[in-house]
Amino acid sequence: MQRMAIKLENVGIAVRDLEASIAFFTDLGLTVLGRDTVSGEWTDTAVGLDGNHANIAMLQTPDGQGRLELFEYIHPEAIETDPTRPNEIGMHRVAFSVDDIDQALETAAKHGCHPLRGVATYEDVYKLTYVRGPSGILVMLAQELKKN
Figure 1 (cartoon, rainbow, N blue to C red):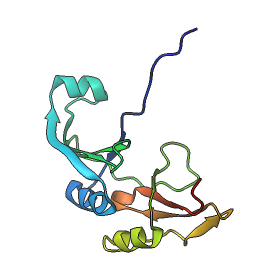
Figure 2 (tube, one colour):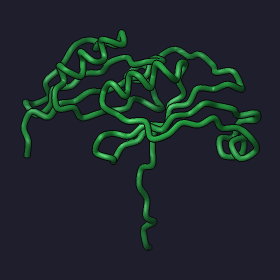
Figure 3 (cartoon, helix red, strand yellow):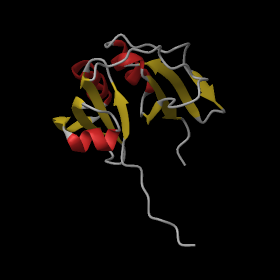
Protein backbone atom coordinates (compact mmCIF):
# COMPACT_ATOMS: atom_id res chain seq x y z
CA MET A 1 0.00 0.00 0.00
CA GLN A 2 1.43 3.37 -1.03
CA ARG A 3 1.38 6.02 1.66
CA MET A 4 -0.33 9.30 1.00
CA ALA A 5 1.87 12.41 1.14
CA ILE A 6 0.95 14.46 4.20
CA LYS A 7 2.40 17.40 6.11
CA LEU A 8 1.17 19.52 8.99
CA GLU A 9 -0.36 22.71 7.58
CA ASN A 10 -1.15 24.62 10.78
CA VAL A 11 -2.69 24.47 14.23
CA GLY A 12 -5.90 26.46 14.59
CA ILE A 13 -6.77 28.15 17.86
CA ALA A 14 -9.96 30.08 18.67
CA VAL A 15 -9.10 33.12 20.77
CA ARG A 16 -11.03 35.65 22.80
CA ASP A 17 -8.95 38.65 21.64
CA LEU A 18 -7.21 38.35 18.27
CA GLU A 19 -5.04 41.45 18.72
CA ALA A 20 -3.76 40.39 22.14
CA SER A 21 -3.03 36.88 20.84
CA ILE A 22 -1.16 38.23 17.81
CA ALA A 23 0.88 40.52 20.07
CA PHE A 24 1.83 37.60 22.34
CA PHE A 25 2.92 35.26 19.55
CA THR A 26 4.72 37.93 17.49
CA ASP A 27 6.64 39.03 20.59
CA LEU A 28 7.76 35.40 20.94
CA GLY A 29 9.10 35.60 17.39
CA LEU A 30 6.34 34.48 15.02
CA THR A 31 5.42 36.69 12.07
CA VAL A 32 1.99 37.46 10.65
CA LEU A 33 1.65 36.00 7.16
CA GLY A 34 -1.83 37.37 6.59
CA ARG A 35 -5.14 38.41 8.05
CA ASP A 36 -8.69 38.11 6.78
CA THR A 37 -12.35 38.07 7.72
CA VAL A 38 -14.06 34.90 6.51
CA SER A 39 -17.71 33.99 6.16
CA GLY A 40 -20.14 32.45 3.73
CA GLU A 41 -21.24 29.05 2.55
CA TRP A 42 -17.69 27.77 2.02
CA THR A 43 -16.73 28.46 5.66
CA ASP A 44 -20.00 26.95 6.92
CA THR A 45 -19.20 23.80 4.92
CA ALA A 46 -15.50 23.59 5.77
CA VAL A 47 -15.93 24.24 9.50
CA GLY A 48 -19.31 22.55 9.93
CA LEU A 49 -20.84 25.55 11.66
CA ASP A 50 -23.80 27.51 10.25
CA GLY A 51 -23.29 31.26 10.08
CA ASN A 52 -19.52 30.92 10.55
CA HIS A 53 -17.97 34.41 10.52
CA ALA A 54 -14.53 35.07 11.98
CA ASN A 55 -11.50 37.32 11.90
CA ILE A 56 -8.40 35.23 11.29
CA ALA A 57 -4.63 35.64 11.29
CA MET A 58 -2.00 33.19 10.04
CA LEU A 59 1.33 33.31 11.89
CA GLN A 60 4.56 31.51 11.08
CA THR A 61 7.65 30.52 13.06
CA PRO A 62 10.97 32.07 11.97
CA ASP A 63 12.16 28.77 10.45
CA GLY A 64 9.15 28.75 8.13
CA GLN A 65 8.07 25.28 9.27
CA GLY A 66 5.33 25.96 11.85
CA ARG A 67 2.11 27.91 11.47
CA LEU A 68 -0.67 28.96 13.81
CA GLU A 69 -4.06 30.09 12.56
CA LEU A 70 -5.74 32.25 15.17
CA PHE A 71 -9.42 33.00 14.83
CA GLU A 72 -11.80 35.25 16.73
CA TYR A 73 -15.47 34.44 16.15
CA ILE A 74 -17.87 37.20 15.18
CA HIS A 75 -20.74 34.74 14.68
CA PRO A 76 -21.80 32.54 16.22
CA GLU A 77 -20.75 34.01 19.53
CA ALA A 78 -17.63 32.38 20.95
CA ILE A 79 -18.27 29.99 23.83
CA GLU A 80 -16.13 30.48 26.90
CA THR A 81 -14.81 27.27 28.41
CA ASP A 82 -12.54 26.50 31.29
CA PRO A 83 -8.88 26.61 30.27
CA THR A 84 -7.48 23.23 29.23
CA ARG A 85 -5.61 21.38 31.93
CA PRO A 86 -2.45 19.43 31.04
CA ASN A 87 -4.13 16.06 31.72
CA GLU A 88 -7.36 16.60 29.75
CA ILE A 89 -8.16 14.59 26.64
CA GLY A 90 -8.22 16.58 23.41
CA MET A 91 -6.20 19.43 22.01
CA HIS A 92 -3.48 19.88 24.55
CA ARG A 93 -0.95 22.60 23.87
CA VAL A 94 1.24 24.28 21.29
CA ALA A 95 5.00 23.88 21.83
CA PHE A 96 7.89 26.04 20.70
CA SER A 97 11.65 25.51 20.78
CA VAL A 98 13.41 28.66 21.94
CA ASP A 99 17.07 29.61 22.09
CA ASP A 100 16.75 31.24 25.52
CA ILE A 101 13.91 30.15 27.80
CA ASP A 102 14.57 32.98 30.28
CA GLN A 103 14.20 35.58 27.52
CA ALA A 104 11.04 33.85 26.25
CA LEU A 105 9.58 33.91 29.76
CA GLU A 106 10.38 37.62 30.12
CA THR A 107 8.52 38.21 26.86
CA ALA A 108 5.56 36.09 28.01
CA ALA A 109 5.46 37.94 31.35
CA LYS A 110 4.97 41.25 29.50
CA HIS A 111 1.63 39.76 28.40
CA GLY A 112 0.73 38.57 31.91
CA CYS A 113 1.67 34.96 31.04
CA HIS A 114 3.70 33.01 33.58
CA PRO A 115 4.76 29.37 34.10
CA LEU A 116 2.08 27.13 35.57
CA ARG A 117 4.57 25.95 38.17
CA GLY A 118 8.17 26.71 37.14
CA VAL A 119 10.93 25.70 34.75
CA ALA A 120 11.99 22.04 34.75
CA THR A 121 15.07 20.33 33.38
CA TYR A 122 14.56 17.05 31.54
CA GLU A 123 17.63 14.77 31.73
CA ASP A 124 20.04 17.67 31.10
CA VAL A 125 18.62 17.77 27.56
CA TYR A 126 15.86 20.40 27.81
CA LYS A 127 14.71 23.18 30.07
CA LEU A 128 10.96 23.46 29.63
CA THR A 129 7.82 24.95 31.05
CA TYR A 130 4.14 25.47 30.32
CA VAL A 131 2.70 28.97 30.39
CA ARG A 132 -0.94 29.97 30.19
CA GLY A 133 -1.06 32.22 27.12
CA PRO A 134 -3.80 34.53 25.88
CA SER A 135 -7.32 33.08 25.93
CA GLY A 136 -6.03 30.39 28.29
CA ILE A 137 -3.93 28.66 25.60
CA LEU A 138 -1.34 26.27 27.01
CA VAL A 139 2.04 27.10 25.47
CA MET A 140 5.12 24.93 26.08
CA LEU A 141 8.51 26.61 25.80
CA ALA A 142 11.55 24.34 25.51
CA GLN A 143 15.25 25.21 25.32
CA GLU A 144 17.58 22.45 24.13
CA LEU A 145 20.60 22.25 26.43
CA LYS A 146 22.73 19.82 24.42
CA LYS A 147 23.01 20.46 20.71
CA ASN A 148 23.54 17.31 18.65
